[in-house]
Image (cartoon, rainbow, N blue to C red; front, side, top):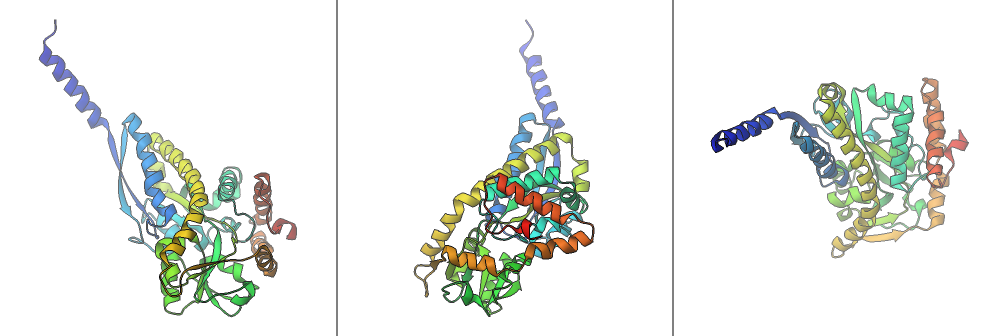
Length: 359
């Protein structure tokens, strides 16, 4: 019979060798927006947590996450460059504010009122990222690798004073992020460029009279306090960007870690899409409840189907205005737009305007 002590010593040695073999990888993950914004918070709760969960199964690698959310490293106008240039290793890229660098990524914002089904939208964009070389290449050319996709919930107009229809915003200054401001063309309103991080102050100081924004972004930053009239048009959802990693950093990662991140990114995308659906209505009702005691109280003004259609019909041919200059530069925007709209229809989506037929 073997002595007990040597067996114990051997077990301890094996355990310590296994523990020693685990490699810790240091990565910085950052964002311009705070974690109270749902799709940013889900980077922690879904992407990072899922990556950790997958890696712990084999025990070969562990990630030490250095978190810099909420604009600690950069603001909303530098999300792409900050990942591209390695200011952060991983970050949420806000594609709305990058029309020059990510032109095909603007397809949904250039075709408003096409889709209100967020999971369907994300499915289509995920498929296009895999199948369309030009779309994939515009991200890769920025020295980033896409890990997970994001989209918005539905857009409405939040105002300081009540309106009865889309015609009432004529002459008003409405804050909107980047290319989404184009959705106000034809309405007579003046778009003020901004982001969720600036909207509250813009309204409070009179820079704008309201915002064109989304409930899940508005609620955590309390825009309803300064723009209490929620004029509900259910305008559209839109592709808004991606969790991305610096390509140079990506190339240094072990294959096991890369695979874990790809799986976690797909999990994030799917979970985020469902989150947009389930929490949109909750966010609207929560704003009403929180604002019941303020003066004036927060009020949802349901705009009729005809009012929504009036807005759709007011818009110029945004899709053609977007696609034609890109085509002149050799970017296949018209083909990409048709793939996008076809993909939506194949998911059962019925666009309120057939933009691809207007090219």
